[in-house]
Image (cartoon, rainbow, N blue to C red; front, top):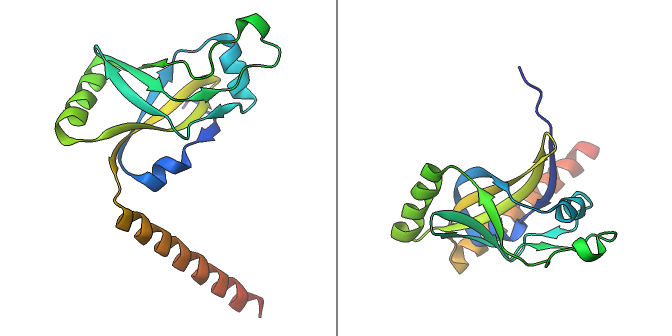
Length: 155
């Protein structure tokens, strides 16, 4: 059995707040060396990012990769569009769902899998305001229950 190591670099918390995640997929990402070094140092932000499909290819838009400190002239534009690497059949299936059923493709997290950078892409459906309120109420109730149990165990 192979030993696989994961190291999560960034997580898109806003995506879980704004969308219902229907399905999760893994994709490779096409980057330059200075971008990978910057991401290794944690210089990446997924907050306002989304994925688009153009001419049968998957692209990541809005992901901010901070310029690498020692990269000087080799640094690229922090907000440039990055190509995601997936099989054509998977991209075609996602394209059909996004166009017909009104789903969105949102990057959920970036991680290293055996020193190779991967992006977890989620097929998501937007939440309404009342859904967000329900989620916040559930989290608050869960937090209060955990506090009460912790307090009861102390005494």
